[in-house]
Image 1: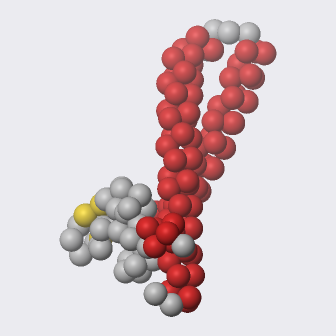
Image 2 (image 1 turned 60 degrees about the vertical axis):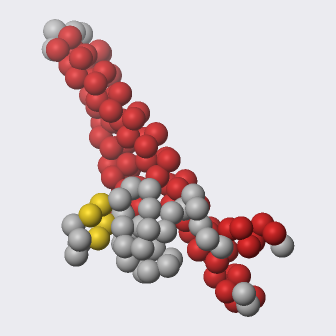
Length: 124
């Protein structure tokens, strides 16, 4: 393996680690948004007859919830448009086969957990 191949492998590893990190953040944000949505839905019936102060607090919380959901969707865009370092296809989707994969590349099967160049980099 030449020096440029090693640098390319390390760069690809870093890209895949960043993808894994972004996916983990999205899972946490998604769980938080789902919990907040359930709580807001259950409280929405009680807010109707509440004081104006409670209603305004609910509106502020609803606005913050909307901002959080928009931020989560904006964070999904780089994850969903990530290109595989090996085959340069969309990592999570293959339109020709109509497949969607979450853990490995939909085209070539490259997995961030089992990157082939990782063992070579650790032995140096």
